[in-house]
Image (cartoon, rainbow, N blue to C red; front, side, top):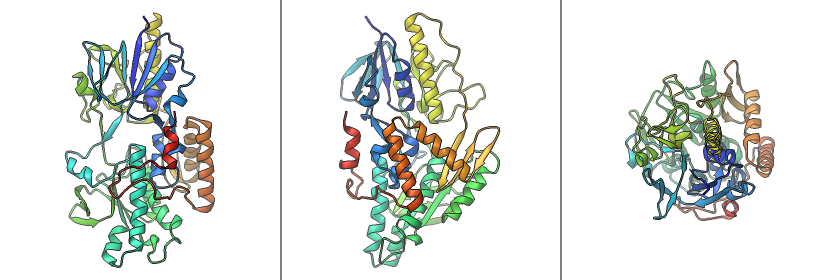
Length: 431
């Protein structure tokens, strides 16, 4: 009987694992709560009306058509019975496995203030992005019809909490949306008067980058009109805005990009977890005590021997997925297992706005237009199919020359952010 390999999560790690197992004599099942693979690094561009959902997502079944040994199951994992080797699904069904790979990713953490989640938007899925897009555009529309100057000021105030890459990208693109794209579209309000506030409790935005790159990022954001607030912690988020230190900031939109926590895989396994809930894994990415269970990507805490776990980045997940797939393939074929996993750091990048980015490649750093050009080329090449690359390139080129954005329709969400399928989002749901 052929071994059965179950992979939970269709993100970068999960898809890399499936592809590494393409020619293995085994049955591979990919389980995910959605039916698509999402290119998360460009998710913020859907949220800010630069791209449509189908530009950065492709149906998983389409991507795996040539993987003869792989099947796709749209389902939500809910637990693991390690004794019986069974993955439990939220609808009551179960899946037997001989090997299990958990690539379930991470969610945003509100640092013990879960009540804030009802008032702040997060960005992890296409639904999140469309909900943010709706809320941003609707704020301008409501301000256009409002006669109360104080309410107009609130509607045109946008707060981003967290100075990491996602927070910086969102703040910069919202500023560009208000200052350029929407600048001439309204009669009663001036979109250029919009207030964009980026809050970071640390001393720098993009603090993981070396040297003067964080200072360059702060300066670039300020030149776009973003109000960068450093060294101040958010103490309250409610329906009317936030409290930052001693100051109240009334805002129509609060976007939370401040911290993440792993999905509850550690609880499923009864495994030791890091502070963020990630599963502490061995040098081969397996879960200690369970040699046939692996955790990769954001759900795993892998210490390369430095005392600091690897960051939650797409390259980490992809390299771990490829490694684990080869390890399982070797075990099934009776070959020698590979050496312990070693992460190859190819550098990190963050985009700030039009023609502005920073890049750290270890021996040298880039900033400004050259970094932005490198960021653009790398992200185009990482998109999974030719159609996505072509559409994103065309959208970027048009936006660069015209300052326009082609995905500015209010069609798919109600006032509470509930998604209603529209033409753009339905494209990704076709198997």
